[in-house]
Image (cartoon, rainbow, N blue to C red; front, side, top):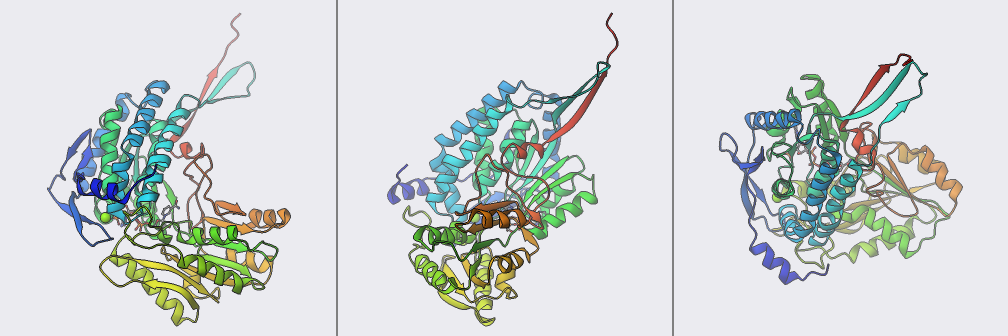
Length: 498
Ligand code: NAP
Ligand code: MG
């Protein structure tokens, strides 16, 4: 879809901001009437005040979710019915994609181009893909003798709490909600406090699509209050969380101190982009290197910020990536020609700027980039060369547009440095030699290895982390359904009929 800046501004100025929680099929205020502000990080302007849900609101939503789960209208509905409702929702998202994208761009500082692609294509596709999976998922029959029949069936796991980050607000909601709803679960969603608006609209659209009351509840709020109340609730069966490793750890603690709910975690990363000496240093490689670090202003869990490049080509590589970085257009997220929008908040921008200063103080060489002064939260794409593996910016997840080149001496040096991290989400390998590519792919302890191109895979391929980047659960692919399903064995003892 081609869009004009004028059209985007016109839609932005006429937007209605959704400000309430969505519980049991109704928009409502928080029980105690409390609200919090959400702002546009590109201008600093407060957009609106949103309901701040507390433990009592979480209780109300869980009671509605449990009732809806037990009455079976969704959890035991015919597969064709669940499919039809999810396909309706997918269509409604496509129809409302432009408005949703403008809402999300204003709330998050993400570019309108990214928001439109993520919502109009990816989010809608998720509900379609999982909707279509519902009536094509089969159970198993175990091999037994004639004396028994053993059925292995999958059942919806119950009431699930989905706690989301701010970097891909509606896309992360879809990654979790589409398979959870397809599985037949009832859901409590907490969007990030910085970006609650698009998720609330999704609740309204889901109801329009025919989802029964109570099956989907959207509870905006803060981590310490709403998030913790979900994590500690004794009648939530499953948590699926995406966010920082630190908060992921809190959810394990909440589960241990409450009902031992199952916790699925998708967390941070510090992913390597490995370039071996035989790789073609062509424009395609440079484009992938830059995109891997600067996509979504670097606010991406799989950002390949540690670029491990063979020492023989590292200088040329760094210069060329820096030249590419200077060409990105940083600015108003609502402008369709903008490549890099605003950092999500001033506080986050200051944190990223702190890392840039730390990199220089520790002796890395800044080739381009840095923070921009002014009202909005903007950082130019930043490239450092001459990093050593011990430097802070080589080790910490920065979550901003900061790329660092670490020279390495051959394939095993690259592997040694790549694995020396607490994270294990993603890695990219560039080489012309398939044996060397697979040597690395098999040994890198991470959930996704991308060869000769930066990619997270797609809707059909599982995504998740090793080590402190994740638990055994996976988003995407048929694997995502497993997070929201229980496995039951039905063992039938058979007697001779004659
Ligand atoms: P975050 O601070 O961990 O927040 C994630 C969610 O947890 C938010 O909804 C947050 O609420 C909530 N939360 C915060 N403190 C909490 C507490 N004490 N108890 C319960 N809930 C709490 O992460 P973020 O800054 O939004 O997102 C960035 C992180 O997400 C990065 O580390 C990134 O790598 C990771 N991420 C991972 C993936 C993946 O698939 N592996 C994808 C995207 C992002 P508030 O918003 O109110 O703080
Ligand atoms: Mg906001």
